[in-house]
Image (tube, rainbow, N blue to C red; front, side):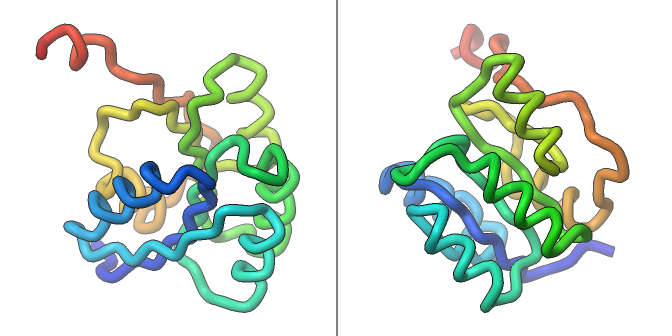
Length: 141
């Protein structure tokens, strides 16, 4: 059974990325709460309810690996996905080791809303391989 009206905390300091993700997810009736800093995101996470955490790899006050670990400990049943341009093997492994459910590399050409809904509805009991950009999608345009 698919869940409707998901609530996602998106930790991202680039305003254009925030607006794009809010628009994309809004079409799927996914509410996006935005935080541009680690401190603000943590305060929201402990005071509000979210179905999923979506993290950029780095924001204005640092890398989000520590935040990922804290979120995972605070709410182990809530999926955490990195959605980041930091795409090195160490970045991806560190994100998964910090407690992320999945690591999506920007630009991500999959269906972001569907990916988030699947993470909430089905969960990912074990870490999956990171989802790299799909080069064929770029070449076919």
